[in-house]
Length: 282
Length: 322
Ligand SMILES: Nc1ncnc2c1ncn2[C@@H]1O[C@H](COP(=O)(O)OP(=O)(O)OP(=O)(O)O)[C@@H](O)[C@H]1O
Ligand SMILES: [Mg+2]
Image (cartoon, rainbow over all chains, first blue to last red):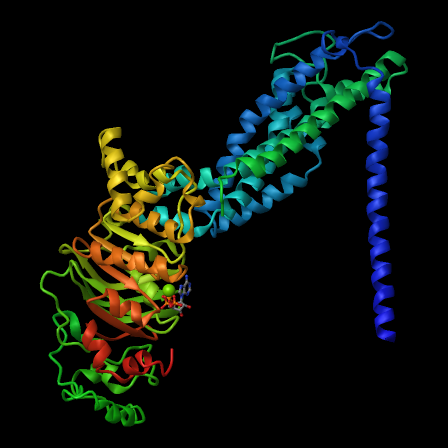
């Protein structure tokens, strides 16, 4: 009886502690979201999506920043996605046990956790200094470098989940390894790979530091990839630190837009996992 | 080893016609291994020489069965050894695979049946650290000849696995996979024909003809296994290897697959690994018994089951162990 009482008490203690931890975590998450919504929604208007970033004191929107963010993210994922997928394929399929793979995996993990500001500085040295000015393409490259390790990791993990029996079946039919990968392994891992790409997009679309050193900002509408380009994170950074109320308001709204977009991406990723995966699956 | 030409027409002390040589064998197991049968026994001592467990008769790696060399054999395997790293999983196996016949391989778990099967289509190549020595000849050339392309070889040898493993594709695309990658058909109509006839021969057509576009993974286990067989015969292999194809299936599905094997036998050489002695007896014409990586006995299925020549075989089929 006694022991049972102790067990019950311990159980209750553990339950309340973990409940408390969850509550604290959720509280801050909720508080952040609430603050964002409260302050951001106030500034939401069609003008946000149709006007350029304004000078201090006058009204304007975020169109150029939105455009810049989308363009740079897209270019980044167009560069980083394939590179990351191919590298992940190498790790999972060709070099699974080789020594070089172990090295690549290690370096990739380092890159995965490297502070993004370092990557910004790196691209600054690599491109900005040489070109002599900030540019959208430099920003895209910096984002690509951040996207690569994420994609490598998810691709490798997803390919490793494909059952060996399925690969063996293809090999035993006389398929070459590349054919097995493209015709059997990729389709089987499709939903996982797509999710990985979506998560990589979500990851880079909020990055500020690398863009500060590369794309910087642009007050005006610009589609020139070789010139500085406005983007949401840097605009938010500058506007939020400014003393002008209209800029501060736009910063809140921009933050809300980024958060909601990332939320939508993540939810889409989850839906993709459950829907797009081949029926019956593994 | 000694069997490269043909297994020695044995002076082996196999039972003198009556099944009761076993009593003698029983005694024999205890005989010190120094007492190896004459001649080749001495030469035969492998470096790995495990000196226990196998009674002296089995010491030679030649099949105990004297009918072993087969005239027009599809595969001629001589002294096949397989190593996984330092561990030897198959020891000097020599056996022929006859055309239009089912060869069943039985033996306790871990005795190397799957390993041997995987030698025949070079699937061991895909296992890191696996090494195969000896010779396996298919139409006059060693399949491990470095000149030979493993993928093209595998295209001629179908394999059905223990666990049904359809691709995450539609039923149609599963069956069309092989013909497509080997460009066996020239038109869509031709491909349709191959898919239809393969599914028909695998006994699955009627069940799936209305839903060829739905995923192969959505079928039941038995249907999936028949789909895998259809997928295999769609590339018109010369040999079909089956590794416990029914172990995940219920008796009805098993019966269907066995019927199918019986039909396929008219056209293909089939090698099947099974844990069910009844299944071996039902579907095969020849049976090989493996024990701890060695081929102990091979012969006509009826003979092996009614009159095993080796004590280990007898122990196994009478259920005394394994
Ligand atoms: N990939 C591998 N790596 C290392 N050892 C292996 C590997 N595959 C098999 N072996 C070993 O080789 C021996 C033979 O294995 P194999 O799978 O051929 O046995 P089996 O007769 O098919 O057994 P079962 O009836 O259980 O399927 C076993 O001792 C096993 O541990
Ligand atoms: Mg096996």
